[in-house]
Image (cartoon, rainbow, N blue to C red; front, side, top):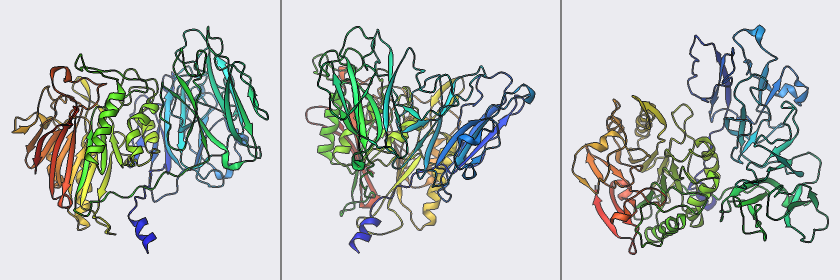
Length: 638
């Protein structure tokens, strides 16, 4: 009975897997239609191809249907490259469809399967990236086919992400190249070589030298790789290991000779399933991974580098994420949320902006110290990262920056949620990729959200009564993305109508369940109603950044009936709350020294705390300053 109750009190996070794919083509005289309930990938798969139709991919995520477990792309009708072809479904739109079919070349077909005898790992994301050698998150697998090969269009590649254990790696190699278009299948883009690239150039940041990439292969019935060592110069070589005969510091003016050696054995427990590279001087080791403690760009001792600090990580076996208890009020009916806005982390040391001249600022470490003190003082039940978690400049590895800004909540085993800001996806990873990274971090509550909504990461988390098995909840937490959209002549990050309609509809559904919980809503960019001159508590040191538009966000909040507080970031030196028609519109205030601020003018960084009492019937909020005493200011109850 105790075991059953524990399971009921834990969050069973059901990720949204892709259950259907549709391709639609249209000529220059007709707009391409959308499919209801599907998310359209915005990239035209024939981008830049003269005389070609536009082809768009639409993805469906329906938990009632079986997920797609694998995809392939095949030129012509050469199905001999696909094993068990009867278990695959071919989409009936040619990826290279032309306006005049007589001008067209041989067709390019997309196949998918749901058969678990082919793959047991459901696909959670499919993306398309532009460039001859684009970089994707290690959570993705590249299909080795340039979608526009020989078509004189843009180079496009498709990537997909899967959940679950992978077949072990059985061989490793490396390749030197002059450009990032560095693959084992270059020159024959439709031959499946079996070699997968470890993203990131091992010689990044080296002024003189060649690009070097690692590759690995997974082959059935071969012994797996169970250990990897990296040796410098004349270090003794290990017995029973295979040398990758490419100097990882190849053709550089200075630096160590660095070689990778690997061992294969039948030790299945230690079989290596994945490899990844992280850039940065002190990378955080993500859950389930191990770091090889040698800087692959080292100058003379395996530590001090002269290019980008570069480290190899290996994943042995497959570990399920720690179980996350569902969000609950404590025995006194209380629940505390810490909102951290505009952290502006990097994977490097980080910078210090707008700090007092005599302040001993250490970049990202200073922000980490502040977060650590906040967590120890407030002991929150939930941490919300409300956008611009990653900086736009000075970031060479967005994935590594994610591991850094979440490191303390993971160490302290605190559930956390996040939304995106305008800077988060300004580096090499899209929001879609960042979601795939974040949801694999312990205690993460982040979700992709409904596929048909604008943006990525619109989702709901509920807070329940402590220790009960009640199906209905006591408080609702909404998290909304602020996707880029056009307002007049400018592009801004702002909540869109479809997202607000979804919030209203969700609220109505909760009411039908005989539940009438109060709610809070978190997002990145303020809405226009923050401009109103109502009595407010806190400072307004800059203009509200969102321009006026015809969409009345507050009207939708009122239709939802249960929303008591909305809290955002973006405008770093605003930290006020104002009440309008029974709803508190709040800023958190900027928390990170990597973003602009006003500490140099006596206005320290800060963060907002929201405390729910009486099972969410009473709310209090305050802020903690980044000073020696973590000074509490602007306490209010509503």
